[in-house]
Every structure is written in structure tokens, then in C-alpha cells.
Image (tube, rainbow, N blue to C red; front, side):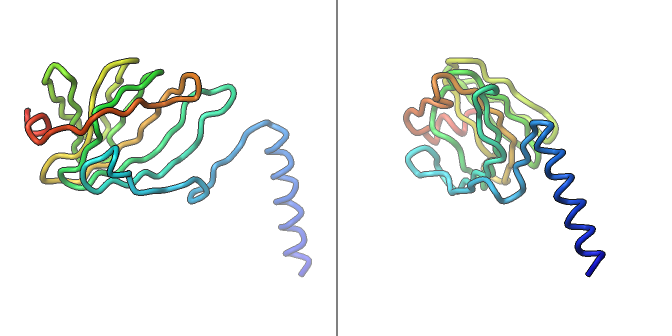
Amino acid sequence: MKKVIVILAVLAFASVAFAEQGQEVYRKGTQKSFVGPAEYFTGDVTVDMLFPANDTAHYSGAYVTFQPGARTNWHWHPAGQHMIVTDGVALTGTRDGKVIEFTEGESVWCPVGVDHWHGATPDGAMTHLVISGSKDGKAVVWKEKVTDEQYMKR
């Protein structure tokens, strides 16, 4: 019993010391996870939030997993977005018809106002870490679906 009390006291002290440093931990599973809504995605997509934007850092992070053939609608980001592939092969396309393929460990910066889409290849799932900036409380401006023709162009 003494051992348990000592451990609890150490944890309480560590928790207090940690809070005093002004850091906040977002434990695994404490942020929301959801299926990508059909109004913004084609195919099966899961979004696992990692951390929210806050008053100082106007960006959030999430793992987004796309099953084969899944993709976002056309959209743009008011404060840009970094995409880092953590598993599989990603595709991202822009209005000029250019489609870029990037793989695990590679990243893409999508600047402010650039209409684009991203997703998995037709034959493989893909997960990427997205870090999305927020401006005036908005991280994304959604548009229409990406057609099969636009998606298959590469």
C-alpha cells in the first residue's frame, strides 16, 4: 500500500510540475476521430485529430487515412497546409491538371488559396499527417467533388 501511495504522490508532483511548465498533453484517444463526411470526401476516409489550434498556434494536426481510391473534394486552406505521408502513397492534384505522387516520409506544402485535392492511389491505402493553418477560425474552404477523370490524371 505504501508503494502505491508513493507512486501516486510522485505522479501528482510530476503532473503539477508539468502543468507549471505550461505544456499540455493530448493523450492518444482523447481527441475526436470521425469518418470523413461524404459531402467533403469520396470513398472511405478516417480522420484522427491529434491536437487543436489554440490562441497562440493557429494550426491543428490530424492523421487522415484514405482507403484505395478515396480522396478529398477540391478545397483550399486560408493559412496553408503541410501534408506528410506516414504510410502508403499519396496523390495531390491542382486545378492546372498536375497530379503529384509522394510517398512515406515525403511532404508537400500547399500554400494559401491553392485549390487542390489529395487522397490515396486507386490500389492502395494511404495515411498522412496534416498540419493545417487556421485564419479567422477557418482551416479549410470546401468545394465540389473531384471527378474520376481529374483523379485518374497522372
